[in-house]
Length: 226
Image: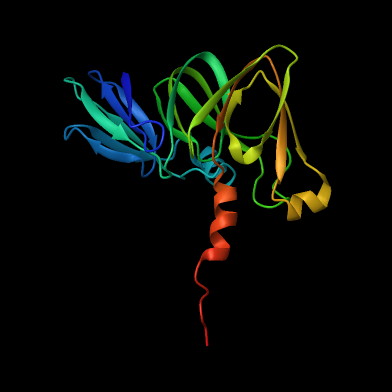
């Protein structure tokens, strides 16, 4: 499998070349275009209970699509819903925790499962709900805005707003908390943060969906029910 990333970082597109018989599993609705002879199978990834957990807790689709190339190989192009970047990682028997909505696709050998990363959502709309992506293979992630990489040294701690978190290595220690007390949480728009302690890699996104919605909603036309 070869992944070429185009039009980064604002309107990224993943152009994926599959060798003969290779397959890729992608988030529902992410396919832009593909070779006509690719075989498409839609199913509950990991069975009923894991699919329910991924959909209800992780914010991902209940069903996922698997695209398999013929013996001649093929091509598929994938893109996220929101404008932003696409990032690839080669997992080698390791695990990453991926923020809800950031999973785009993965090759064979990568498993996805739902994992709580801390407190449930009770401050505003930004809880830390994660997918656990593990195994060996290619993992394709998406962000709202550009992706910023941070490599934490052993014992180094970095505090991140959960709305800007894309993914981090599972070996990183983490703690979810509110910031600035109740007044700051409800009035200041900060919500929850996560303290990440290295060593390991962290991926951030330069924009927050929650912050954008907070800006957008008051500006939408009000419905007149009279």
